[in-house]
Amino acid sequence: MIVKVQEKDFIAEKEIQELKNNCMEIPGAINSFIGYVRNFSNEKKLTSLTIEHYSGMTEKMLLEISTKASQKWPLLGTLIIHRYGKLNIGDQIVLAASASLHRNAAFEATQFIMDYLKTKAPFWKSEEINNQNKWVLSRREDEQALKKWED
Amino acid sequence: MRILYFSWLKEKIGLNSQEIIKPKSVETVDDLITFLKEKSEKHKNAFSDLNSIKVSVNQEFADLETKIKEKDEIAFFPPVTGG
Image (cartoon, rainbow over all chains, first blue to last red; front, side):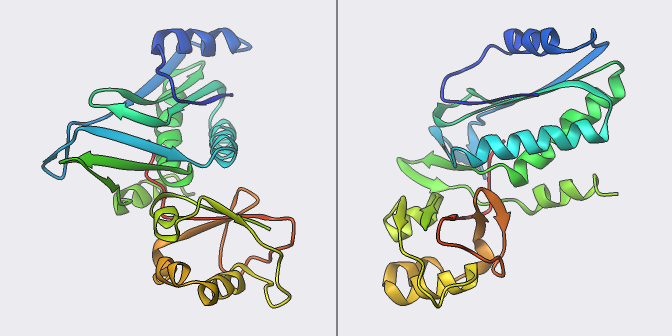
């Protein structure tokens, strides 16, 4: 389980290679997701995005999410990188990836990691619109997304 | 105990964190909020709608009934918006 919380950008290919190299067996499948900064928010033009986080708890929660995913699917490894600080339009925010012997576990685990991260990892986004910073409100759909994994 | 604030709570209260000695009357998170609200107008304002506030104790999600101790790290923040 690799977890990185960092200000600097990442090269997805390099990070996925690291995930692959850390697997005990050769993974037949690695699925990955990258989240980027959008240029519009509720039809308003964005100039930048600033992300704050709770250092310590963030790493703890991301590891907890990775553990949960590994208990639910036969994974060979997981990777979560999440950035904080000031980001520009189109910048990478998050990379989540899951490695497994077969594709289904990898597909599902990555989606699970993202759904969990959205409601459990202590990050807060602030959007800059017309030279004003506004805290992003949480979305009810994100809470709903978690429900599909409950069983 | 150490209390941390994030996002708009930090801005409304005007503090990143504060250290307080646990008063005898404070046994739960709910008691702590009551104590803080009595102490300052800024806290009173920030904690006016508890539905929009999450809490963690020692970096684990908690709730109003969670018991707290002198050495605990308690954080208050709005629902998370990462990813």
